[in-house]
Length: 258
Image 1 (cartoon, helix red, strand yellow):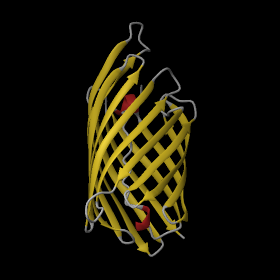
Image 2 (cartoon, helix red, strand yellow):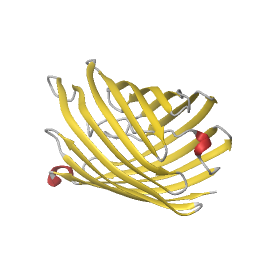
Image 3 (cartoon, helix red, strand yellow):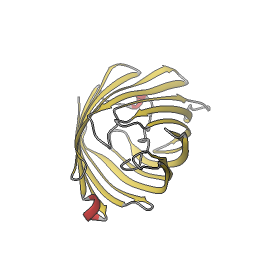
Image 4 (cartoon, helix red, strand yellow):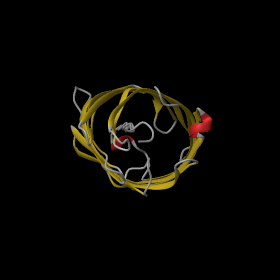
């Protein structure tokens, strides 16, 4: 198994908060790993399209390319959607599929329910599910309850991920805390902190053994509108995988709204 298998954070602000009908994004990433002689550097790029054909419904398409010196190149495609079903419920769903590699899933399905409660509907308990099938024998089954609070110019999110990896029915968990400050159409800054374990059965060994590694992930990202319909974004990240590696990442991108 290669790398920490973390659920990416999806912060849903409610589709009515978006001011665009179409958004295009182009993103590039560079990650430096230590020990560098063993892991080298990882590079990736993404092109995303968000389209809101009607109020309360947005779908998106994403294409990603990856390059790792010791693990080869790979591509990933994603199709997903955000849907407002009622004043108190909205969902996020996505399906992704990747080319044959040791670090990209063969396919993955995510679905999340979000419930808007409180007088201002700004408290959002959620429950999410994910299924990940890799190109080898491993599969992941994940459930992640969480809660978000949306205030004036800020959002705070907490999620708890419970993961079962097969074969071996190996259980692990991790936690995610996200704090965002900003306003749509001006700027957003997010600090994300994730901590927990990666655990699976190392079936590539002659005598398969359980692998369990503690991990800490920190990310600081910023999105800024330089015009009403044009902006830039970027970020820095750090990952510490105990008895594994340290990873230092930087990303940069541009987005255009229509």
